[in-house]
Length: 105
Image (cartoon, rainbow, N blue to C red; front, side, top):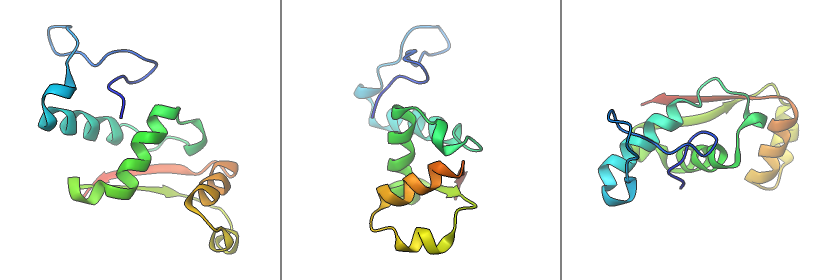
């Protein structure tokens, strides 16, 4: 996971200095949780590669950290059921401009 968000700006503390998230796992988790919560309501197809990586992590493992990350979609459910991988489902959801939903559980 990257410690830059968005557009390669470093994460800074209240004093304006960059925070080294690699040194403190609790701080790293807290920051990434806040970052993923910021994706709520975004159009799935507009996520940057770093945001997509963060979203996928929390979609797969977020419940351990008290976060539920899903995609709200109007895609054809039969087409989604026929998809043979998560990547194929993601591609279908990108085509129909699905929305990211991220909440605390």
